[in-house]
Amino acid sequence: MKYYLIAGEASGDLYASDLVRALQERDPACEVRVNGSDADSAVMGVAEVMGKARQIARRLSACKRELLAWHPDVVVLVDYPSFNLRVASFARKHGLHVAWYIAPKVWAHKAWRVNALRRYVDALYCIFPFELPWFRAHGVEPRYFGNPLVERLANWSFQPLVEGPMVALLAGSREMELKFLLPRFVELERLMAADPRMAGYRLVLAGAPSLSEAQYRRYLPADSRIELVFGRTYDILHQADAALVCSGTASLEAALLETPQAVCYGLHPLTYAIAHLTVKVKYISLANLTLDRAIFPELIQGEASPQRMFRELERLLLDDACRRRMAADYAELKQVLGGAGASAGVANDMYETFARI
Image 1 (cartoon, rainbow, N blue to C red):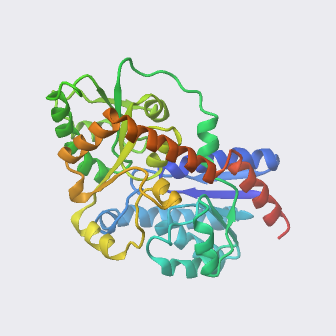
Image 2 (cartoon, rainbow, N blue to C red; image 1 turned 135 degrees about the vertical axis):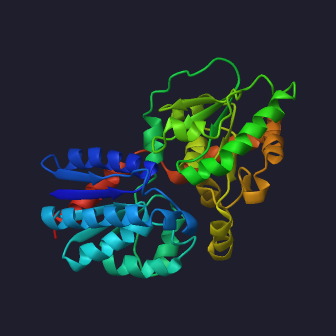
């Protein structure tokens, strides 16, 4: 069979790569093409998307041309709904079968998109159990084989990174997230340096593969002691005593690695104003949503001040009772998500579904 995968962000690339390996094991004669993420199209929010509209349009046109020329047996869309919904519509109109891996978060906002999923998608794969009843209630029968991050982290070979106590900083994978968080992390560094209890912690900033070192350095003054490290995110989180994490996949990674954390997030004011009116969930973090309670704090927009970050870090690092409660919650989270094997389960189901069509 011929599989054409489309991912739009760094996390989607990881999921897609794991799925490709599983597909090759299940279907050794398969042909696979991957249309992966890039820095130009990996944006989010009204103000940010407007600034990248031309690049996104070019990528969409190129994708359509390749689909028509190659004519895969199944188009596998990996998250990234703003782009992939248009691809799904195009694929269906041209007689191509569509599978969606990492179901779009329509349960949080833009619920009307579920209508397009019903029309254009042959198989929808979720990675969180709480998504299943929502999709069923809206006329879509989802499929669940576990969360791929569980197996990815279970198979990771961790390597020590630095000596001494450490705080991990994860500022996101988009330029607009760096712009919001890095100046606040720099001020946090100054607050920690002034407190004898916190001054000994090294601050290690995990660089995202979708961004360049220059993009990070733009926000880090020459006298900052924040250490920027690329390609070692899991090692950084695994070794860290605590972490401040931009919401998203990184927050779930921190939870599965049992790293005490606080989520920090902010948007362009216009994007935030719209999101505040349209987002219909209690939490922005996947771990909190999975257990339906705040197992770690979420500092959003104005709450994500350096002073508030400092207070949360103080609690995460120095309050043993807080750390024990979070560890117990993390253990429950792992139990709810299930064990390894998600990618193999999806690959097997995808092969069995589309080989018969």
